[in-house]
Image 1 (cartoon, rainbow, N blue to C red):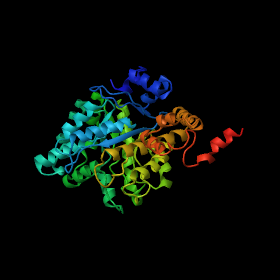
Image 2: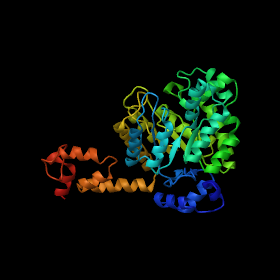
Image 3: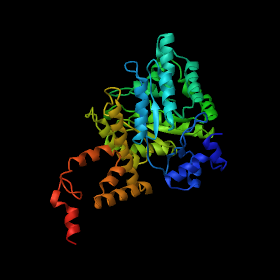
Image 4: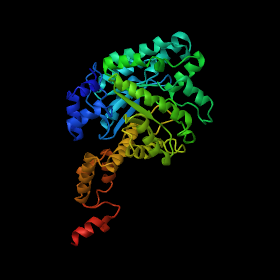
Length: 424
């Protein structure tokens, strides 16, 4: 049985109990929200995955994308990236490999970590079809579902499936004034397939079959935003909202099958549109957990998109998003290296913490109070321990070793804390 099915029967699973303990809320709350689809627990029955809850009333979670490409493939480096991402706070890892050894990379990452692992199966179907048949658009329904079934059997915990790319939504893109068209790789695979074959998207047409596979293995479906905006100019347009309407219907169908489901959201959104986007999604998709990439709030900062996405992520998560996909400084430019993976995770951690404080999550406020006390007492070691990146502040502090323990070189003898303390 899936986690949702067990919750609907009132069964408190080990996963639910552990999540409740970690999050500091009652098991009954977690159970009720899993039963109604407001919380998902990505946990394939074929894999020993650390319990993780995503959704209403829980702390904001972070995903890190890793994976090879045809232009760059280093299995060991991708495994190191996954490990580093988890070390610095990523709750899940998605393998987006499209290089020749995509299977080996995926299995190595799954073996190296216990956090939930996500994938985009259409990549595998497209890669295999491109080599065997000549082009991505030559894949057929069997190729698509073979990839989904293979990955489900392997133990993949959640899968991005672009079921909202339909003949109708593709036509809306063609008739729109979009600046950048379709920027989602999985979305482009399926849109090109629909146009070339003049047929309906098999993942939409055969959605019940997809649900059967997901239910058998308790794979959480992440309904992909194949028509997400790729620049600010395209945000909140007709194709984006049209796809979201389709996804809202598919959310209910998944729940009717006792299949866990979350929904993916936009990537490039002006700051003033983020809150509305979150509210629209929560309404249309019946409070399904919302998984967003960023959002990136300006297109003018290549090399710094971990910052632009953290700004958008904080706004999104404080307005209803439950799950942030990190963005690294290499976004739009190249495959990230180890340091860029670390920077991307930390930027998302900052966004998640800021949002959790804003919405009143007790655990987030407890951390803030601990840091305030450590700063008040000049307890540097405690400050470093609480920091998202202990190494960086410690190195900064080491430049101050010539001064006394209870000051830094910013204020020195004019430290506000010391003056008040010493004169009261």
